[in-house]
Image (cartoon, rainbow, N blue to C red):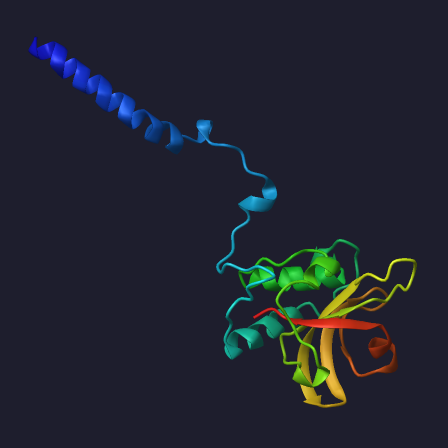
Length: 184
């Protein structure tokens, strides 16, 4: 009689632990899409900008400047070639932060900066350079330096000259300027 009671307890214990064992087994876990398996050091989302120190902003800018001179390549995200949103994507990724990949998606990331005189280094700037049928953000960059009200420099990947810094306060860039976002 004692062995029967013991075997019932063992079976109940086994059945009680079975879900935990199966859950920890990779064979029984649900496959996740590649978009959800990417991890970041900080939780980030368009509605919740990350918290970043001024030293980290300087590092972010230094990381982006490592790509100066890299040629333009549509869809590129490395030193062999990159596009404008790829530059931002690669820079933030090196800092351990995932941001959207495309410029139009990046233009919704973080908090809007409404006035140019409120821009700070590290802010993201967005442009509509192709005024075709759809006026959609298609170019992005990051503020690197503010020397004065008429000298606000940003880094971006130019389709004709590769990764470079330009003055935002110019006839061309102000003519296609769309918005700015503070990612932190």
